[in-house]
Length: 438
Ligand code: PLP
Image 1 (tube, helix red, strand yellow):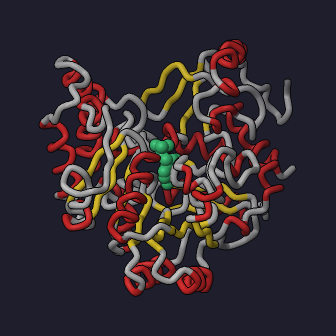
Image 2 (image 1 turned 45 degrees about the vertical axis):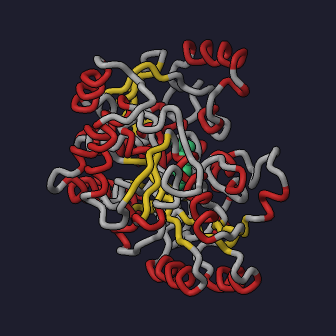
């Protein structure tokens, strides 16, 4: 069928695979936002990725701006990562015992990041955040935590309260199955709201273990915070002997090698990582000073473990990826390339008087159907604007451009996007905007 001015892509094989998947998985998927509920059509089943490109089961080719939701900063199937992974796999895939590869990845990170002195690898971002919260509680001997509305920190019970990501997509602000007592320990305040944070600290004096924030909130649109708000969080945590946690699962190694901590030059007490750190394989991590990390088992009393933590194959992928990121000029080039891309989209939209803004930081961008100059809280987002995203998503797929299937999700530029890719994407975006605003 034709909805815009191009026929919809063929999805016969994807649709067939999806029907089969529904027999095996709830909603046919292993992670909710993949189900394409917020956009048209059935989910695309991906067969292959290479560089900036993705191919689905029907052979459709796309320039990919989802990048597996962030990890693939070098693009798909990067030869350096593939070769290192294959080399390491020759010796076996898991030992449940230490390997030199863990040291190597840790050294790469710690030597190039002044914000942490010790690190612990986990197998996902969720685990990293869950462990960081436990650590903060263990260190401070306090139970309550402050989080911000619209920040997503994985599917940890205490943090699935007014989170973003798939939850926003499905119009829910929480999840079933979380004991009220857990959620009661989580105080939720609005982003960019100093007074609300102050009030929470006053109401729960000496009870707040930590404040956790995505310093670059990127799971509910891209809600870029003012530098002074993040500095304020640092100060108020210090004044109250609470710990500040930066959840850098997205921003880590993305807005710079030192992530948002380096970008804003603010030292949090604990930082969590995921996505990029694993080069596309399942890795998360949390890091802090020697003093704080000495509380983790077996050195200290805060227990945290993992059968596959520090898995050699995953470490190999992380080592290969981070080695590339440390090459001189990497981030400068990425950031410049992204800025040129987003600027020219913004100029086009503005020239046509479309109510459309592109927000950007580093190689992260977000398309918002709005007239507002700034969007810094989840309340600033007009839910009805997501209908426009839905149309745009279809038009872009029809033009060979793949974005994450929700208007609340950000896009990622990778090192694999060439000038030609970005030109092609821009043209497709311009045409799609013309259709959406017709
Ligand atoms: N924290 C942030 C900021 C995230 O964006 C995510 C995932 O998108 C997580 C935590 C959870 O990471 P994972 O999906 O690897 O469990």
